[in-house]
Image 1 (tube, helix red, strand yellow):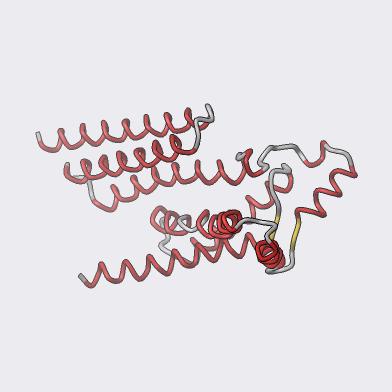
Image 2 (cartoon, rainbow, N blue to C red):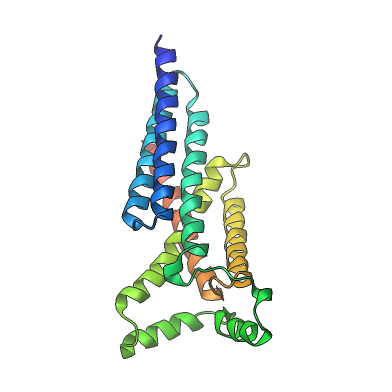
Length: 221
């Protein structure tokens, strides 16, 4: 009886979480602001976690439940990641295929939006902020946004993956960063900047180091 109740409650919680994610996507498409999107996504994560707790109480192994919940959380994270790196109009994320514009427009776009010199863009941000051309909030959003956007990915990949290798998870994260930067260039919805890559991977490495330390403390207890 307890097992059936746990399974039923777990399925109900998972379906409720899925419903909240759909509501978040609907609010996002309707441009009701970021509040609805983040609120619904947070409820999606909460309900899927509660579903995992119910499944674990019904006798399902904790490792399997942890992987299920992590996969579902990863879907929510991926939606937010793609939403803000490829489909955000506020940051000029409007897609136009690179080969559909004129040669002059293509040349100008590539000249302005490709940077392979490390720390060049960061220096420009720093100078613009010091001279008053850019508010502190814009610089903060750019730097810390790039640090945070890929930070959870290696942890998700480590938990989901069959081969428990943090180095492999970081390599996959690096590949994802390069893929997103490449897609941004070919769809003209962003820039390919080595500083973005450094910040993205810096956030990922920091998150991995923090989680390793956190897991060690849990094991000691």
